[in-house]
Image (cartoon, rainbow, N blue to C red; front, side):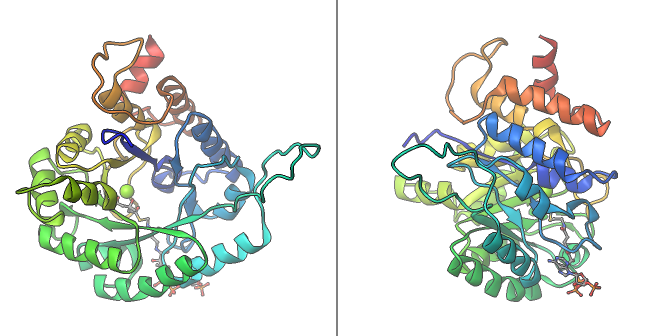
Length: 339
Ligand code: HMG
Ligand code: MG
């Protein structure tokens, strides 16, 4: 496989929409996910099975999973904070199949329909203060709470991804030590997460911060052989909120250290309900443009490849921003739409 292929995890329908003031109907969320799938995204977070008292915006994720189009080979992870969330998801999966259109006359018989989702994402943080604000428990308590959730999810055939929040700065306690991030990331991998996404929740990190962080989390910059590089590429994802505009630069710092997975949000949607002032993730359109350029614009030599139709994504970013009555935060998206 291409060592310069970059996986993009589209988090707009979850990280983006969880932060909107208005309650968004499941049909609109489902339409957003359907469009993102048709635009070629391979991983699309579809929502969360969290407490509606804590995050009312994510209520109805079961409805979203039922209504959206499911494409073969595309993963649609949902966030799960505890066993109650996994119970709800497994109950849904045992009773529902996705709405895929299948020609009844086709022979030989078609394989069984894929499940509504095959993946969950667990989340914790590098500091107790953020973890308390987000999930009402300490980091140690959250890891103890999540381990049986990961085990049961895996036993039920689900893939499990993990998140560590506040990997650079915590809105409550300030700068975070990279060793704390490393230990929490290891704990998530040990409980069976196939990948840990490193969340710069506040979006205050710079390329130098990300380099220093990864050198600690990934075990030092010296003597990086191909095997170690492969390990780095497999287990880590960058989840950079773009509050200070350094998201794309941070991605390139991480690319140079071997990371090949990044979370991004169409139109730059989003924020975090427990990180005041933080804006959305780095925009999917901006990430794709920086990686690959664009046929119609100034983009030239291509070092990296990634899935996704940039023109279609620019349209989706403009469309969803309009539907939500918010500003389109993607620079590349706006430029492409103006072309
Ligand atoms: P709690 O209040 O300690 O939990 O919240 P509890 O067990 O005492 O339950 C309280 C109520 O919630 C009960 O209802 C439960 O039944 C219900 P009541 O008896 O009062 O009617 N409840 C649930 N309902 C539905 N689904 C569930 C569930 N669990 C309990 N799963 C809890 C603890 C973890 C539940 C809560 O704090 C919570 O849901 N937090 C989620 C916060 C969240 O979603 N944050 C945003 C996602 S993380 C993020 O954005 C960061 C990320 O993007 C990376 C980055 O940028 O850093 C991933
Ligand atoms: Mg986030």
